[in-house]
Image 1 (tube, rainbow, N blue to C red):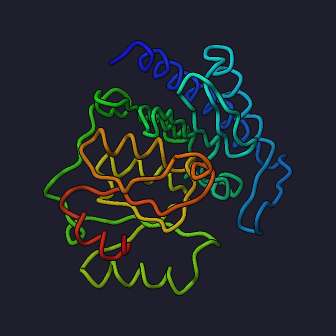
Image 2 (image 1 turned 120 degrees about the horizontal axis):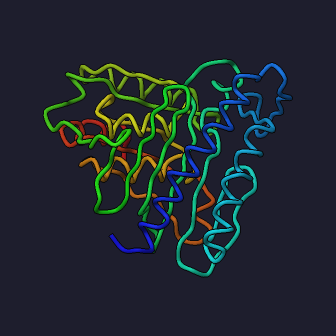
Length: 262
């Protein structure tokens, strides 16, 4: 692993852990938060999201001032180093503000268009998923590997949706999973469910429309754990737009690709 990546990996894990601790403090006092809506009534945000993103951004800016930074709350700051950090300070804000533990901090680093670092911290579970290109994936230091014997028929498939996806399409996805003999799961955090694919808790995850900050850390984790991911376009303005996301263990790839129509 190059020194450029190893130094950023160390900071990514440190920042994720510190951001997770800060977010957990807000979570434990969420009755004091002012909740705002963004695109629709299901798309919520609070000061916790913004303060956690500022914490991560500040650490990165001090250590790597020439790196780019894309955060869900404050947008893109271009860099000149060739590395761009892609951050969701609290993925699963709706579960967060409603007192459910299904939320996490997601930090990715991309280089030449590909995620080379992915760290996801789930504070309520005290689980830290860490990965880097060519270095494998771990959960609290234990190596992660997808199980090639797992299929949609003998395991559980995660899927997600939002207001960008029609109700009809949501129904089609659920029907498609059950039609092949599978079962489906959703917890409100796409980033966490991608980490769960890497950990073998889910055989795959599909969502028709996700943003880069939601998926790129999870993509690195799944790839390094031996899974397959559908390419996410990070070129230019495409990095700021949503796209289909699919991550899956080898034994479920063919079935889930048909359901996703990719």
